[in-house]
Every structure is written in C-alpha cells, then in structure tokens.
Length: 247
Image 1 (cartoon, one colour):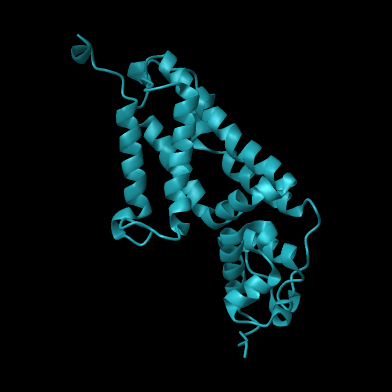
Image 2 (cartoon, rainbow, N blue to C red):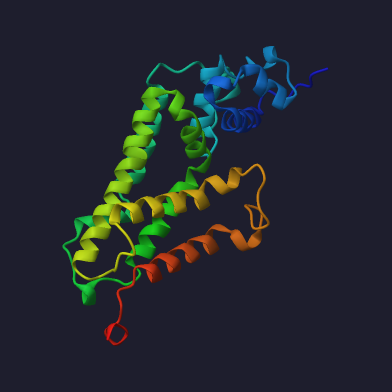
C-alpha cells in the first residue's frame, strides 16, 4: 500500500521531483515516476501539483531554497503558463549576472601588469563558483531538461552559458593584451574550459550517480577547498613569465 506524507511536506515532493527530472529528463519523466519515488499513489501527488509541468516548475523555483514554499492552503501548485519557467530562469540569471565580478572587471579600464591584481582571475572564478553553487539544483534541472524545452533552451544556452563564455573570453583577451596574464591557449577555448570546470565542481559532481572516492560527500572536496584549488590552478596557469625566467 502506498504511504501518505503530511500535507505540509511539500519540500519532500519538490526534492523528489528534482531528482526524477534530473535522472530522466523532461519528456521521459511522468507524474507516476515522482509518485513512485515518494511511495505515494499518483492521485495523492496531484494534491501537491496540478500536473507534470507544475512539478517541474516547482522544482526549479523551490529546490534551492531561494523562495518560501507555498502555504498548504495554496496547494496544489498550478501549471505555469508557457513562458513562466523561462521567465523565472531569466530573472534568476539576470539577478546574478548584474553584479558578477567578471562584469565588474570588464567595466574597468585596461591595466598593465603592475596595476593588475595577480589574483583577479582567481577571484572571478571563485565568484562564479559561489553563484553557481547557490542555484545548483535549478542549474542541473535546467541543463538536463532545456534541450527538450525550446523557450528554456534559448535562455539557458544563450544568456546562461554562451554569453558568459564570451564575456570571459573578452576578459582574458584584454588582460593578455596588456601583459597582465599569459594565455596557455586560445582565449575562447580557455574561457569555455574555465566555465565547464567551475560548473563541474559547483554543480554536476553533486549529482554523480557513481561518485568517485573524492566525491560530493568527501570533506576534502568542500566548496571552500574546491574554490581555493581552482583559483590557484588558474592563477598559476595564466601567470606571465617573470623576466629572469624568460632569459
């Protein structure tokens, strides 16, 4: 017999929906899959969310804890309008992008080697990591399901990823032109590598179905340790050669 959960346990439903959508993608996921993950009858789950689209929207909106959960009296959550989820993601992206440390660095005049903070790139990487980590469940959900949802894909892969890779490539090119950093490869390739590497550690490793020995639960892989490692790695990889070394 399917067990029931208290009416105020909407957070459990959100968590289960997020896990199922991440595992199966949007099209393959059915309401029954989420009900099975919870040990509920499908009819009981409809008391929390109107349909599959409502479950997905709730997971994106609430799984990271940035918005208060709806009151029990407001359940089931309704199905969103066609563009609502894309608008939610666009709003979250806009709020984070507005004061990215990367964009602040791009707004500053170009400096020579002596005037540039040698840890500037490390700080940009740390800032990006922290912002991704704050939204890691929603990012994983959107990254997994956006290819199946055109409106969401346009926002996520355009504003969400491509635009940030382009901005980072511009930053790297400007700093390389002044001699503040040395590029180990093409700026566009390095920018994409940085974004993918930071996303791997801030987001994707937490959803690895077969985590390696050093996984999300390993105390040596906490966010502070990872960001320090990434910042040091990239600062060293892009450090300009010292005069005595180039002779």
